[in-house]
Length: 130
Image (cartoon, rainbow, N blue to C red; front, side, top):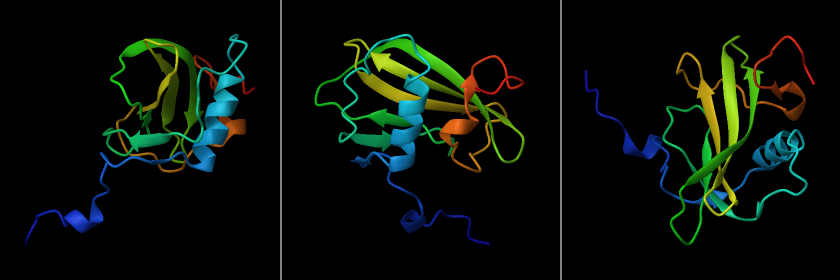
């Protein structure tokens, strides 16, 4: 049996793409949970790149200059359709702009279903939905 990967079936993670509506909605919803008055330079028309995270759904905002991690702005949780907890963090860069929307599924499996804004809860408590 030939186990080589068919490269035509593998997405090019290095290729920038527009922010999807579901990503925009999730970021807006997550940001509304913060105590920061104004969304950091979100540039929802900006390009993003899919993160190499094993299919967990993370994205990184594309910037013309190299940026580094600044801080975790907010952490939320969501229960995927297979019942596995997913931690989602909205991170800023060292200039205060959005850097990434990072997903971590606790069993390291790929995301089954992208979260809807009404399904997220502040990190630390799946028992108390927003």
